[in-house]
Image (cartoon, rainbow, N blue to C red):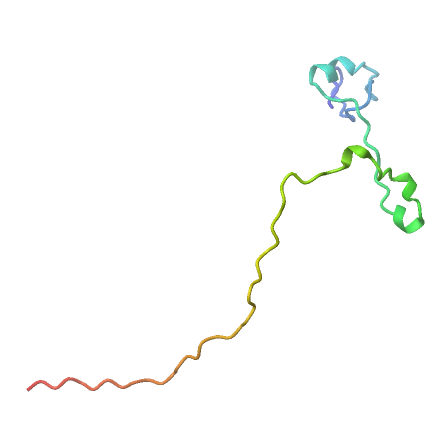
Length: 97
């Protein structure tokens, strides 16, 4: 978010400008920006055995299918191609009588 007082660009979740110290909460509320600080991803958790840090068991993320999906029909994967004849038939020229 850009500070309306000094023009310093900072993160949306900060309450004050780091450049001039101006209060940014009123501007953030006016623009309907949520003051949520993002949580960094820890992509190495499965490798170091820290799965408990990931909070994978949230009940809100549970997805239930609304419709049933029919299994795909069997498709033939035969790659046989019809035989193509490369013989050239000569045409006889028409004779005018």
